[in-house]
Length: 118
Ligand SMILES: N=c1c2ncn([C@@H]3O[C@H](COP(=O)(O)OP(=O)(O)OP(=O)(O)O)[C@@H](O)[C@H]3O)c2ncn1[C@@H]1O[C@H](COP(=O)(O)O)[C@@H](O)[C@H]1O
Image (tube, rainbow, N blue to C red):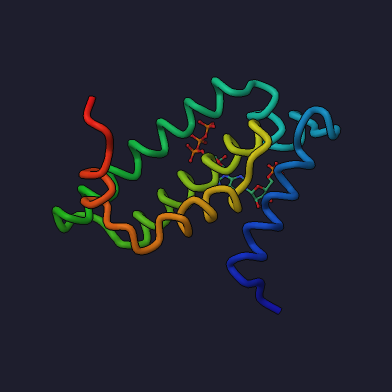
């Protein structure tokens, strides 16, 4: 049985929660627990690295040197580490999905034009 996209995010969110030091996550056996034990700096470093690797994969694809799969792989790494960051701050994917839903139909150009002047 395959999981829906929402179920995948919810399941991963529960796993990330279980890896927190307060919930007994063990850095010796869990990559996520290791990151969370050194949060937020270790997580921020990974988010930065994965963002850079995403840019490089996209540029490779644009230049005809890379595969679409490589870009998907890097974006998955970026999303994953962003979810670990959210978990550290007691947030999860649903908060981001709510924000995207709030923006639904609101043009980025219109939103920017409506911002108060500096
Ligand atoms: N989705 C992921 C996931 N995506 C990427 N990664 C890890 O993120 C790391 C990415 O690092 P890089 O690609 O930069 O590789 P690296 O240079 O070897 O990494 P570093 O040594 O620099 O940290 C790798 O260790 C990947 O295995 C993930 N690790 C875990 N998950 C999920 O989190 C769950 C819990 O994981 P554990 O806490 O390890 O049990 C797993 O069951 C998965 O569902």
